[in-house]
Amino acid sequence: MGSPALIIRASCEADRGAIVALHMAAFGEAEGEEVSALANDLLDDPTAMPLLSLVAEQNGQIIGHVHFSAVRVLGDEEEVPGMILAPLAVAPTAQGRGIGSELTLDGLERLRAESVGLVFVLGHPAYYPKFGFQPAAALGLDAPYPIEEKNAEAWMVQELNPGYLDRVKGIVHCADSLMVPKHWIE
Image (tube, rainbow, N blue to C red; front, top):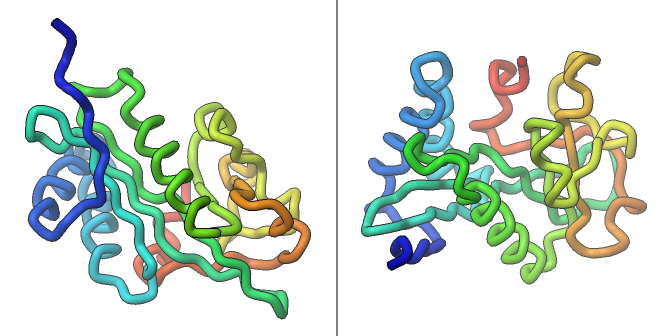
């Protein structure tokens, strides 16, 4: 008998406590408070809208969560519909089973269907390229705050619908909750 089905769905207000607890557990003492506060703050941040918040649920327990929140690219006359993936967490007991990948792929597919042009992420350069992300600064898309040269490959973008990467360059401006320097320092 296999393990119970994994359900990926949009989060609801009743999930908020479980989402915060999940990020605390996944990121531990070192980063847990900061990341869980960010996950919670994004749910109420009007500048994050439209916000796509997805949970992975198994046996009635939330074991994964991801946010995709709105971004604007400053420095160009044209605004391209964009989002940023942050944060992503999987319960420690469920890590290594592909749940983070499933959440990421599901979110990207939903955004593609909504005609979102670009999705950004500041994340592990060995993890996110498998989803189609590539270094963003090399394409003229700069993070809200400078990224140290040693971490430059961690700032990435993916073009979800063709034709957007050629149409916009500049500094990416995120939701107010994410526009805090501590979120951009490694």
